[in-house]
Length: 163
Image: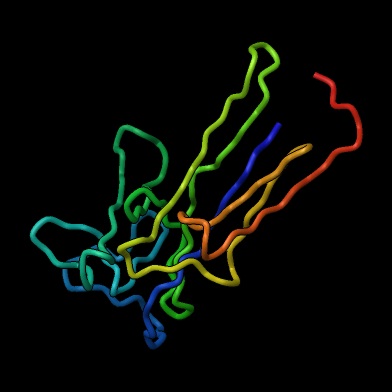
């Protein structure tokens, strides 16, 4: 079985002085669930400008029919934490996987990708976690054109795995 779990830390391109309290624009929500949303970020509210610009506008997906807590979103990325002091946001990405299916010939798989092109965000050079889990597993990550960076990891099992 091949499973890859990705957690990304994105750096904010800001040098903002740390404040002791969360600063938000007047009339704008301070939180989405348990996550504080400090300026320059802001939760999208009709007829209000809560963020510095569209790159910092977040959505609070609050499904009233679901018992799950609201999810703070930046596009397709679920935000787990915002730290203006550290100039980082932590996001949860979709897990990619590739699993051999014994009952059918072939593999069950899901690939994932993310692009920061056209945004003010970059990947952290020091705080990302890239993990491969399973036996005889290889995981690879690289930039979209394959010229700037690439990394990977592999796990090997030297015993027969039973079904």
